[in-house]
Length: 378
Image (cartoon, rainbow, N blue to C red; front, side):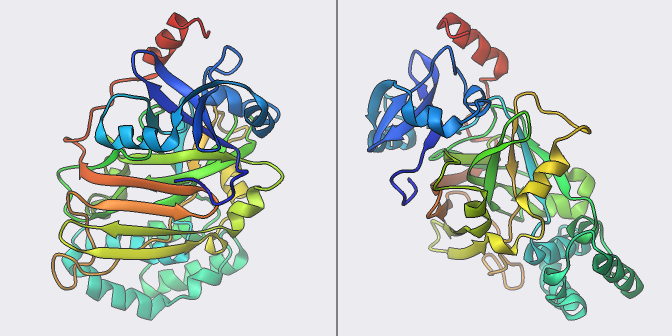
């Protein structure tokens, strides 16, 4: 679950039975509750001048071993359980930031959400475009020339616009406090028959736009819904339990920086009850827009986030391995287990179910404020 570097400074959240949410860190395998009046929320920690120094030196209450908390999280047994490592932050996401996934978005659109048409359309689009888009800098004169050529070929798309145009796609993935964490189930809307996980690195950003650390995320996507119309993005992306983040935010310090994120690689595996297995690897060096540029397009004079935000950086994962029928590619089955692993950030693991079967989201910001006030932490 944890990064390979044992010196990593980790920030997270746990639910303590009969008490409420707690801000936590991990030292030598032990979970430490560092909730205080000074920092009752993860948001408050990230607003500090040096979050890593604070978390690395502050005292707290030892709760249990991380292994015991992980077991309680999965089994439902009594004891503290892991939550997503963010609280008041807005949950934002960047789309179409890898050339590989850009082509698949065009295919979704052309297929109108029908997976049976995807294979033939994929061959046609790749024959016209190939891998040439991977070398184009978004918003450059070269991208403008490519746009003109693709329009001439009759295959220009709104996805190509945000993939190689000047403006990144940044959307609201979900609502603050709604993301699930390590060990929880992620949810698929029941109307979807063509969907997939989207493994991504997620930045933790303060209200001032400072990038404080990173974690892993699963931006669950409904390909058939978004493929019918990009105006259905909200329905495709924001459903109960459709956003997973965790297990911990690794804070930036002398050993782990934004350059570490730029150079990171991570792997996703999907294992089904039917014996199906799929794996893929992402190299962040293939990201078409630098993380700082994506943050700058999210926050600034044009838009403020008083409680900061979590920003998904996009995915290169484009599963095309057939599962249900030849030529239809990948889609989830209930009971799948999705594991996203990074040497720098640890491992995020989630089972898959319908959104209607996942525990409903009932604890929001008002509940958190009342809880903290009752605990004399505000």
